[in-house]
Length: 296
Image (cartoon, rainbow, N blue to C red; front, side, top):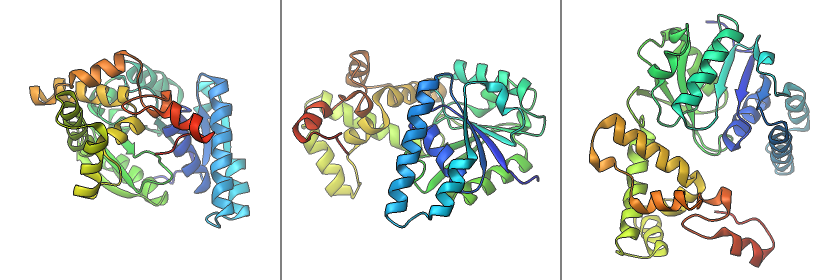
C-alpha cells in the first residue's frame, strides 16, 4: 500500500474547504479544484481565517500553519490533478453529476490513484461503474464541518479492494478521525438514522404537534442532542436533507422514507437553511439585530 503524499479535493464549498484544510495541515500536498475561480478564492480565504483562529487559540503552530499554506494549491483545471495519489470529491449530491466527474477523473489521474466520494447517501458501486477502476473507488464521508467533527464514515462498494479500504482508513486516521465502515446501502449508517429523524421532526411541525422551538428544545434537553433536528437541518441544508430522503425512499423502497411535504415546500421556496439565510428559522433578522452573521 503506497503512502499518500498528495491529494486532490474537488468542490470549494464548506465540505471541500474543510477537507482541503485537514489535508494541508496534516502535511499532505493538496490540489484544490473548482470550476468557479471566485469560489476557490473565497474558500482559500476561509481556510486562512480558520487557521488564524487556530493559531490565536494555540491549537496550531506558526510553522505548521505556514507549511499548510505552502501545500495548498488552487486550480480550475481538472488536469492539474493528474499526479495526485488520492482524490476526494465534495460536489453537489447528484449521482449523475458525480458519475460524470468520476468518468473524467478516471481518464486524467494516474492508474494507481484512489477516487473517493464524500457523498452522504449515493451508491458507491454505481459511482464506481463510471470508471475503469472500480476496485479503487470508495466512499469517504466526512461530517460537517470536517476540521472539527471527529467521524469519517467509509463505504465500500461491491468491488472496493482491501488495499483501497486500508489506504483510505489510514488517511482518515492521519487526519485524527475515528473511522466507521458501512456497506453500500442507501444512507449508509449516519444518514440512514439521522435523516428519518429530521424528516419526522418536519412531520411534527407540519401536523401542528408543536412549534419549531419546542421540537428542537425537546430533543436538545430531552435526549441530550447538542442541536435540535430542525436547527440541524438548517445547518446541513434543507436541499441536502431532501436529496438524501429521496435516495433513501427510492433505494430502500419503503414509504416511511418519503420526504415530508413541508420539507419539499421549503426547498421549492428556496428556504434552504443557514446558507441562504432562511430555512426553518430566519437567520437574516438575527444577523440584522446583531450586525454579525448568525451562528448555530
